[in-house]
Image (tube, rainbow, N blue to C red; front, top):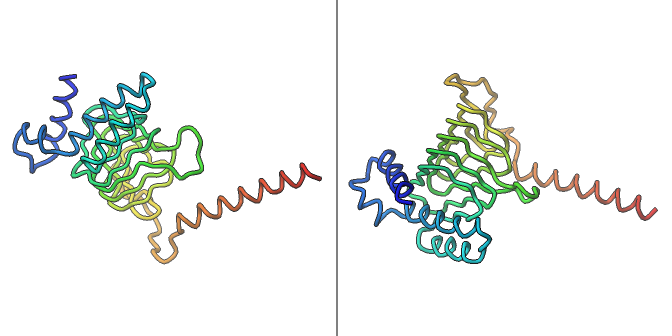
Length: 211
């Protein structure tokens, strides 16, 4: 337990130039408090005490503005900078040494069952306001730009930007892409079209069953 506490404090000390002391992190940083609450809630969650786990996590939300479901799997030395408005879903997984900024959502699209939330590899950075939605992986050492909406897998060592997000750099090399801002597909419309197709398919099945 004490090793984990030291690691969580180290993560802040290493990545936040504004911090002055370990005592400041321990007593004043909401991100540190949220992660500590998550680790307590996770302990209860893994033992089947789901109500206690959620009670701990929801109490932490009210105090910190950071919502981490106790079902999420989080590795070592996660740093949530500022943190207000961060949401990490139940089946999300986060590797070691990741950095998440305020307003980030690691969420689902509403159409998946089971594994519904994203997996972040090691050393991943997710910029403020970014939304990573769906049960895919963001590879090791990748970066998600501020306010990006990521709807599909991001390879390792890549940078993703935009709505919907596109890979603009991989392995330190710029990727040639068409940045036609007037013809970028609407991710919400794409989801609606997908749902309409699914409804049509189910209607066909029902009609055939009744025929």
